[in-house]
Image (cartoon, rainbow, N blue to C red; front, side, top):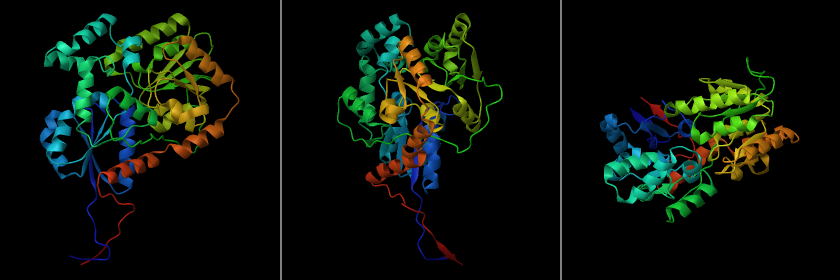
Length: 391
C-alpha cells in the first residue's frame, strides 16, 4: 500500500473515566459524559469510556497505556477511581478532571441526607479514625467544609491532576475557596439537547402542570417541591428514575403528596425525545435542588422556552441570569413564591430559548474541552484530515 496526498495521522485517543454505576444509575454526569463523548468523536477524537470497575483493571491498564490523555469526571466520587488516576500517572499520561462540584455542606447539614447524630459524630471523629472508618466517611460525608478527612482526600487527588474543567466560573471560585489552593482551571460550560419540533401534548399529561425532570433523590429536593406546590392547584409531573439507594425517599414524596392533596404523575424510562414534549407543554419547570451545576434539565427546559425555577445554590444564576426565577432549597415558601413568579411573568419563550441555544450546546462544550486538551500538549485536529490511498 502506497500512501499519497495528506498523510493519515492517528486519531487522538482520550480515556473518559467515571464512577462504576454511571450507566446503571444515570444522573447529570451521565448526560455530560455521553454528550461530550459524542461531540468529540464527531470532531475526530477516539474516546474510550472506562467505568471504575476493578474487575476490568487489566483492560483499563492497556487502554490507558495507549491513550494520549485521561479525562475523569465527578470530584466528589473521585475516591472510586483514584486508582485509575494513579495508572495514568504511572504511564506518564496527563490527567484532566471535570469536578462537577458544589460543596455538600448545606445538603448534608440541612437536607437530612443522613441522621443528625451521624453527621455530628462522624465529623467530630473524622480526623482521628483509621483508614477503614475513614473510607466509610468519604462515602457518607462529602462536604469538604466540615469533613477534614474528605477534604484531605480531595486535595490529594486534585494534586495529581494537570487541569480542572469546572462547569462555571462560580464553580472555579468555590474550588479555590474550599480546597484552599490555586489550581489550573479552564471553564467548560455545560450544553443541552434541544429539538426544533413543536410536539403535541404527551398522552396522559395533565392540561396544566409543574414539571421536574431528573433523578428522584434527596439532593434534588423533590419532597420540598411537593410541599411547595400544595395550594397552587397544579399537578406535579416527575420525569426520571428513582435513585436505587433512596427508594424510601420516594415513598416520603408520595405520602406527602397524598396527605397534601397534590396530584403527582411519575413517568420513568422515557427516551429523551419523548421527554421534550413535556418541557414544551409545562407551565413551569422547577428544580429546587440543594445545589446544581447548573442543572441539565433546567437548560433543556429553557431551550424549549419553558419558564424555569432554579435553586440559588450552585451556578444556575451564572448560566440563566434574568431568564430564571430562583429559590432557596431549604424554604418551602421560597420555592412556592418562585413558582408563582414564573407562572405570572410575561411569556419570554422565544427569547429564553434563543439565549440558551446560542450559548450552551454540547458542540461548544466539546470545543472548549478540546482547547483544554491542546493546552496540555495533546495533538487534536482542528478539522478532518483527508487521505488519498493508492494500491
